[in-house]
Image (cartoon, rainbow, N blue to C red; front, side):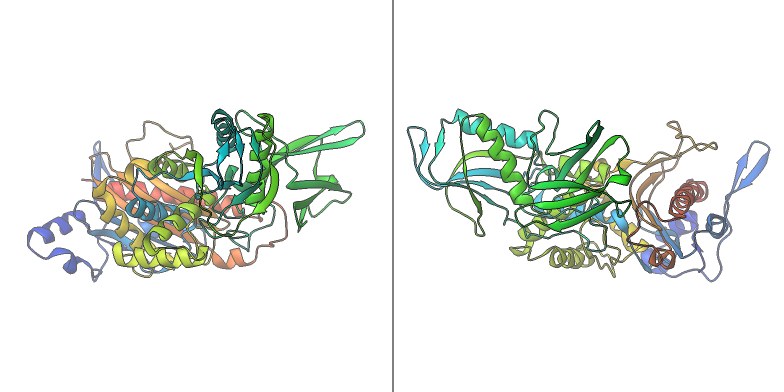
Length: 497
């Protein structure tokens, strides 16, 4: 696979002479030599991309595309049209999708609905906790909603307490190929709490282990019964899961526990989880709720309390910073629901986003299976990604919410004074490493780029039932990161003047 190298000076000259983008869309008959840069009395030649890729020894495929932001012209590419797993770079596309569909000021709403009148503090009807797809709803939010209900004068509910998550479709998992116990692969619902994760903690005592399952937040730690843990006398597997009907039934291997620890586990009954936590806060205010289960259809009623999320721009900034999968799925499906009236399923919503990406962003060949990048069957080309980044650069929405990508010095330490500045979205699966964003060279030249590395053959050999990282994946990922920086430094050396 050869690298196509294009001189920035050539492109500028071509544009001025009226050749335009079309004249530059074809690869030159021969690769251009890297541009030499003076260094003191001598000269330094930027290393070739092929040599850098060979030295990384990643196997599989490495593709990339880098474009001049001002002209939109391709400066250099390698396999730019080949589809690769984009991993969490997908979230950058989801962010654009949501911003252009919902708007940066959009806020998600979670409501407490009353289906009957309130007389002398008594609600003569049902109380419904109705989700609106808010990916950031947390335990503190439900505590505040319960306190507000009390302030509104409600002291008794004659009807049942119900929950509704049907604003967005339920999905048991984001990606069925992932291990059951990983917190980054929870269930998806229009009513989601704490990113649909429950906190499991264990401590060894004189009489064995004590375990707790709670919905902790900054200020509260309400215990829950919707998720339950039993300790099993075994060495492995570390966790098992079964649907306990009215709860998630987990077991953990005693041989893996040590003296103590904690981790977040995924929740598979998100509506019941949120309902249990809210009911516990209502009880603390003297409002006893009779459980009535979930309702399957949207209910009409007076909104007694409304909790609103932060503006979408802030939600997306955190999504890109922390690469939260549930946030990506919920905002992606909310955007689809706005565009076409409903999101029938996560996969259907991903197909709609793919159609939008191809038509509105010119992302030829985009085929995404979700909004987060967790599914390895998604395919996207590096050139399509770079082209989309150029197209949206002028609207000023994505660039400010991308995360700073720090470059390192010769000793591998983060260098805050590095003259090259990068804002980008990273993506990582085992034996997949991606990076896409904007780089500003020391002279101010701005480029959009995408780098996709994937060794799908090595990924196919992963033992999905084994705990921990697959052998060799950590060093492979480290070499991928090193290659990404070296390619960026090369582009700034060759095209940054």
